[in-house]
Length: 279
Image 1 (tube, rainbow, N blue to C red):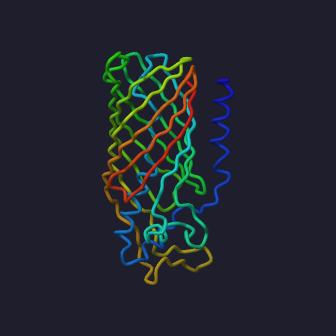
Image 2: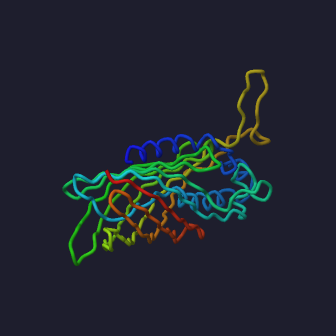
Image 3: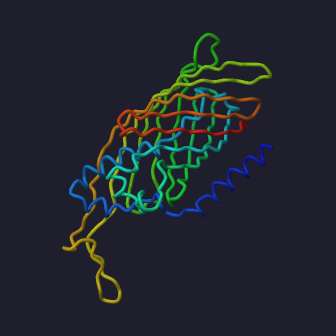
């Protein structure tokens, strides 16, 4: 069963990008053509930073040197798709092409624990209807674990970045804190509620959006009437998230559901679900 789960995760992750239709990819030249383009870029980037932020995947535990978890998840993040900064930023306009009101992501993650309370994790997420993926690595240290009358607490940091977007570059450094408590029900079913805080230091900038590029037949392609280079300079964003979730586990299998609320990302909201196999 474990081998089947591993093969399924690999096949699904490799298969999903074949159905990219690019509706939710970026076309930032249209955003740059607006007089409010710089402010719109910052608002769009702030909300999209919440889209690519990684899941928390359950409890604040390391499980010691034997702990290894491989999981598959699905996430969606609501965006203000009718706002000007999204209608001008996307490859297909929401009003014309029935673009979804949220970004869908298919997520694969792995966690490895060590005997001294350290957890190393990695995640990779593909965004449906795009050619984009995000991914990163990080670590958590479990401050206390397995005490009967006390919750488990972990502190961590990690890196997460966006890949495959032709117009947008985005990188995140995350600081996180998590608290959880395990309750055992009948038949060895565990219920693990957890509460987490995440702060994202985000850097976003665009590739070249305007100007001219000579073409081999002697003509030139102009991105604006003057042929002047145009791009959005790097902007620095701070985003705070609060995550509330529950994990249900029995034997080697677990199911997680979590909601993430970014306080300063223009009413974005994320809901993440997933299952995992513990080896």
